Image 1 (spheres, rainbow, N blue to C red):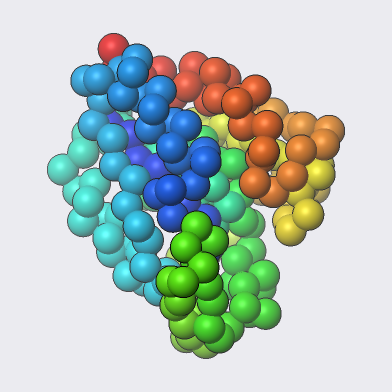
Image 2: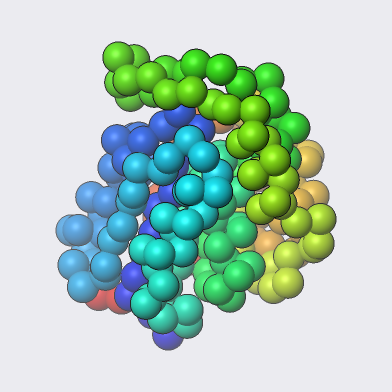
Length: 196
């Protein structure tokens, strides 16, 4: 069944103003006006982010919803897709954010608005651990991962291993932000099978 509800989850320090989020939003608006689009600003607390995501999608039909997530948003997208049994696209997804973000405890600036600050608290690491799963993906065919070997923050081998069995587009270069996302958005939208 075509996807009628689409959620986009941004990464750490990012926002709905990210280039990728805006590109997907523009394509959905132009080509799939019947699709319900939601790209919330996620709070720094992983527990609060998970609660926001759950509340916002509670009435969405699992068989007709999908989620796209970038970096930390890819971690959240995986958590949601495993719970709801929906399709997911992950873009350079964080595999072990509890480990990786432990070095970022303290005051942070927002990527798209350096004047905006937030505090990443020590307890957020435990909240990330609570959302983590050591289990293999229940239905890897529901996942499409775009992974860049040129990612300067995350290890492409670890990402590829986490999404074993999924449809993977492994890029020889690129970067963490997927600056060449315009070359991959068609494949992403094809996988999502959005309703017209």
